[in-house]
Image (cartoon, rainbow, N blue to C red):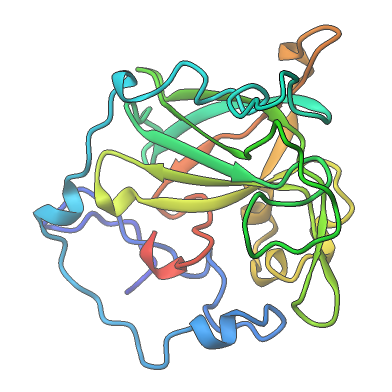
Length: 248
């Protein structure tokens, strides 16, 4: 595919700029060696399947689904750690708000450990923190979560690399072609430039789009700091798709 922005004659989505996303084969990120395609990519025409998508409503959610501090309480207390709010807008490639988009998040706890059977990091689990949440964007494409700032953790990439603090995001837009899975990082984290995954992204502006900015205008006094993370679905300057750069 070329990297121009002409619209497909058979659909509404513009062509992707492959220079904006990292190459699939990037040996410093060890997992990419096995995940990267072994043959040349094939460009397919968009069909009705790519231009339509699932529909979600607020009635599908529990009132606490977007409150990770309280939605897994098991012992009578709230989750432990630095209390934060993450908010932002979801827009399409033309800057139009994407309303009714299901936004799901998952993350490690304040000590850097996931509630997952395969996570053997020595940090303790928090009995009142599950690490998962979801919400649906409003008519202006806005969303927000209340949560605990996740801790960094070591991982077996090459020896013991360390992941910066991050939150995983999954989004369903208005069509399957807008499907997005990505990661959000925090402004000022010194581990960001050292991360092998982030190092696969060549354009500094693309990296910057993955970094949530401290939003002191929205902070909750004596309660929570706030970070803003806006997300762009598709287009030449779309938010980086973490697992499948060719699919976003």
